[in-house]
Length: 420
Ligand code: HAM
Image (cartoon, rainbow, N blue to C red; front, side):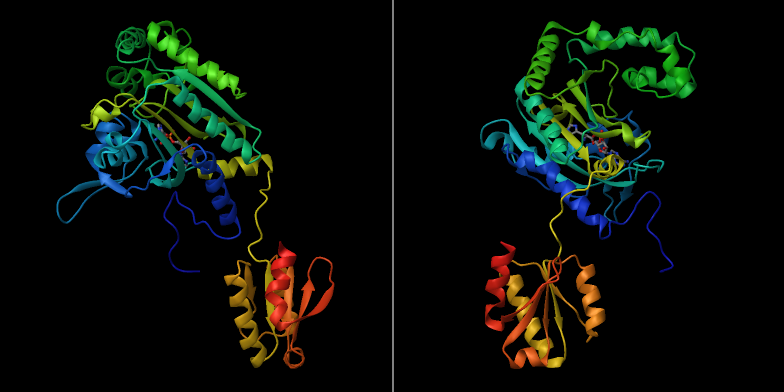
């Protein structure tokens, strides 16, 4: 043990669990890659203002949770708390919206940082797979993204993911609703911090989880009763398309997200096996964000799915992923000369695409075979001085226990054939 441990709110991904994590990342992004989304990678830090303007001055993410720093050159930077503002910034900077047809469809995968109070499923360093479709206002794009996320969860064998769907209205109807909601909220018995929130971001108050607040919110006005015709129609179309694709959802008129850039469609994927941190993914439409960060009008929609929480959801459901074996062949050389020959064979196997490993450090047969069994390999390739003299190696099927001598120059072909 070293005298250091990972900082609070973080954890190390180590084998064998790390393999499931990689597989989840892969599965969450696979549907995107089949739907025309191109991979984008942005820096781990950005100018603070990108997030304060983009995510919102009044959000917890910006006021309490950002890791900020001043560089020696005087730049104020923040470790990215989320991906949307960065991806949109990158697309604008590269003029992707002018390069070809819209929408610009991008996906990403990376680690994000929020100084939150750590608890099960809530970390200060976490991973997301995300997608953004930039520059088009069309319910089909919203529906496409929702369906792709649902398909990703399903491909992992998760049965307990529920989709909550809402619309937050737009520039035309939200201000009116905001005023009505503020009037209602001002009449409630709330603490000072919450009262301040009413003036800056009243919709966030609806998301307050405290029972004493929720009780008072029972008769709160809802966005859906104040939505303009255009927003109503748009939302209805999204609902129809999602429904037609066989993706079940629950209308949740109280769904408010923790980021300020949302307009119209908002959604969250939740899993009931995760305790308080039940959101495994979320997203929505953000038609005004581009202008907020100095770009042209580019109505857009996207989501981010939490990799850490998806792994926890799999664990909660007891789903074992069908992971490919890390090692197909484990080689056991007996003696120095065998060590050289077997090392060369293993190199050849790897070059032929076979996952192969070997026992190092001149171990006894017993110790080396124990390693072979523990490696999960299907075959052990054993060779001693006598085998080499006969020009063969022993190929042992670790499942059936059957063993067979194979000519050294046929080992690679024989193993690639057997492993298909
Ligand atoms: P978000 O809801 O803040 O949205 O995060 C998306 C997902 O990331 C959450 O549902 C959760 O699974 C995971 N997540 C968030 N914070 C933590 C944490 N502290 N620990 C573990 N997992 C966490 C966004 O980030 C938006 N950028 C999504 C988006 C994309 N909207 C439009 N485009």
